[in-house]
Image (cartoon, rainbow, N blue to C red; front, top):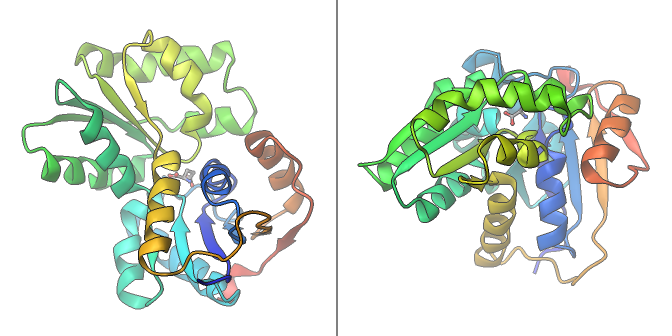
Length: 268
Ligand code: DGL
């Protein structure tokens, strides 16, 4: 048993989709959440920059006496996790592996789509993982950069969201995919719109949900589970204006975030 908190990292507010699932699966765990809001988006940045930002963020989380890290950010999981695992000894779990495994488990026709930021899609991280598990799989990756701002505006169920999704997902429909990985923190919020565009015919894989399940297993296997059954608390840190995080985050988490502190991440 270990009552220290879990560190959750994201480039901003979208990682709250992962936090939400973690709270549901692991209600006794304390969490320290860090959102690198001053430097979002990670999705359009180079690998070197994402690695630099992510290592600084991990160094900050380590000052909070955490027992493990969950990387909610798909882009950081895809581009920087391997490097971090070489540098730090703490267990680090990302979203790619759990999301990829779930897609392979549900596909029937081996035609799988994956959507995410440019960084995530171009890295081929999801695609490689899935092909390793199912070499015959046909995997189509599409980056959908407009989805993040649409969610941050709170427009996830609007006509704008529907038209944008229709345009992005056209190619996936043509390929007759039967499963789609929502490979970005913000996309689970768009799942009703995406489902409507795909006419309810495609299994939507939510890596946030899958990662929370994997985190529970990881803590158990490493004897790191908290002794509490519920009542876990969350602390929030960001690298830019806490007010914006509070507003958008409240919408994603569906409850008010009481206290958010600002961190000078460049010094880490
Ligand atoms: N958190 C990022 C991800 O899941 C999306 C936002 C960004 O580009 O930083 O890839």
